[in-house]
Image 1 (tube, rainbow, N blue to C red):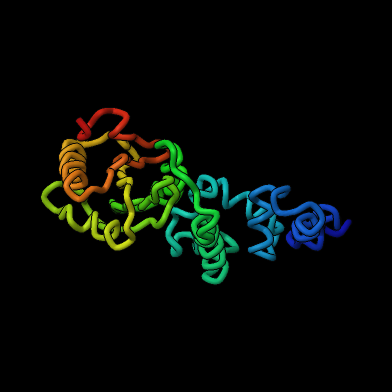
Image 2 (tube, rainbow, N blue to C red):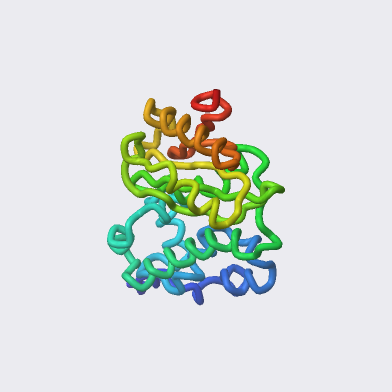
Amino acid sequence: MADPVKPVYRITDLDTNERPRERLAHLGPQALATSELLAILLRVGVPGENAVQVGQRLLKDCGGLSGIQRVPVEELCNQRGIGKAKAAQLKAAIELGRRLALESPEERPAVNSPADAAALVAYEMSALEQEHLRVILLDTRNRVLEIVEIYKGSVNSSQIHVGEIFKAAIRRNAPALIVIHNHPSGDPTPSPDDVAVTRAIVQAGKLLDVDVLDHMVIGQGRWVSLKERGLGFS
């Protein structure tokens, strides 16, 4: 009787030209599939799956890279082959990527449309399990000075102190800002409270000479600009 086929579960079982680290060194990280980049972080697989296959399974089970970012560490540890150390490595890598865009002042992104603003925060904020309200502080050329979290929890007109929203803008001498909050339900449709909050913020901005360019609501894979819809800005 023939010996059973040895299961493939190590990257070293792959052909040299197919190994993620070697491919990254030769072609650059942009040439690798997301599962291959995950494999470099994971380093080893499990019996029956090499690290690339584990990465593919994670992407499928969690709903893509944004799903891995959204899943709590404890739940990620329940995935086969993912312990606390690997879960922490994955979360840390995703967070480093998020922070990179704002690290260099001379490379600060400019916000010239609601889509530009959404691109800065939608990936992360769509994964939050509670409502968070943040402000994007902008300079005179609409380049990002800072993204500041103001509130965590329910965002409604009775809880928000409008002065808190402008405190960071005054500290940074920011002439303009964009308000953004998320809806954990995934539906970015503005609520009556969202409109009321927007109206109060816009009026306060006029008094403080800080231009409120927009208030945006982030949902799951979608976002809404209250300015574009004429809600609270009339």
